[in-house]
Amino acid sequence: MIKTAKRFNETVLLLILSAINFAYILDFVIVMPLGPQLMRIFQIDATQFALVVSSYTISAGICGFAGIFFIDRFDRKKALLTSFGGFALGTLLCALAPDYLFLLLARIVTGLFGGVISALVYSIVGDYIPYERRGSAMGKVMAAFAVASVMGVPAGIWLAAEFSWHTPFLALGIFSAVVFAAALFGLPPMRIHLQQKQTMKPWSALKTILVNPNQLRALVLMMLMMIAGFTVIPFISPFFVANVGMTEMELVYNYLVGGGFTFISSQIIGRLADRYGKRQLLVLLCALSILPILLVTHLGVTPLPWAVAASTLFFILVSGRNVPGLALITSTVSPENRGSFMSFNSAVQQLSAGLATLIAGVIITAGADGKLYDFGWVGILASAVSILTIPLVRRIKPVEKEM
Image 1 (cartoon, one colour):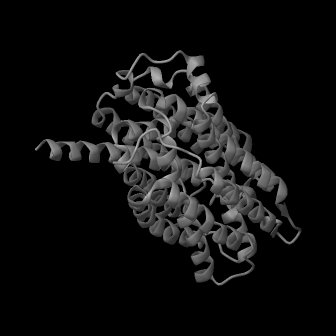
Image 2 (spheres, one colour; image 1 turned 180 degrees about the vertical axis):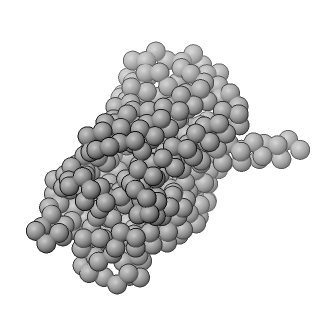
Image 3 (cartoon, helix red, strand yellow; image 1 turned 90 degrees about the vertical axis):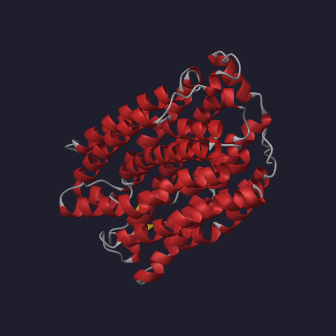
């Protein structure tokens, strides 16, 4: 009876966290397939579009860094509700944006509130799910990315095409309000990290991270994984429309098929990580991801089925790295300091994604024929960074041991 209750509570916990993660991820990824429309409507170039994407991640990174100094001092539920509530309001501001500048500022506001959401979600998973089952739990929570791709992004593209680009943000803001209510009434107080020992003073928490070589290696790993992914991801949609021959509506297939496969693969990867080891599987995925990175960045005009197959393989392997990666990273720190560390990790994650997007935006150029050039060099850069992650993964040691 006790085991049944525990499973039920764990299921509810992961369901709510997955819904929060879904909204958080969708708010970010929905901007990317809207790229061709935003670039056309606002008459902006690749660099200006990259600024819309990176403004969110950079402001989120700044907030994540600030979270180091306070996040472990509060009930995780209260901190999560505060952050997610502000995030929902920021998303609604995006829906109201009348021009490029307003949208840019609204993305900054949304990022400021959203900056610690992922840190809190993954900290809660780390606090309440044992290490030997954490890979599977991470796979379920991170399946939100796939669900966002399967349901959210196609719905967002359709809403933008049928109504306007404002509509997806409005729908997401309303959905976030519903999830906020579910979290308010469905999550219990979360103080387990406060019971471990007296919370460190803010600067002590930062110092503990900076003098710990193992945690620093984990942060560098996150930075490299984000650079390897986000030099490419934001520009897949504009590139596929401008160079590969897809229409804006056909982008739906990229996310529908890719997200569907990723929803299944992320959970399989989570189970494999628990069974065979998180480091071993992460090394394998980092190596295998090089193929789809080079493939999607070097495509010319391609039949729709083959283009969708290439992007699907990219989503499976590149996003799949994050499942064992985050399970490993959360396990390099003890529960009482996990929130501060994961907030720092979130800052690194967001700032690295923003930097990667800006770098790619500078490298990629738009030709007079409307095509995007030099995306292939971006793919080569991302592949080189992926190779750098492999020896680093082997040197990261979890403080918790698998049973």
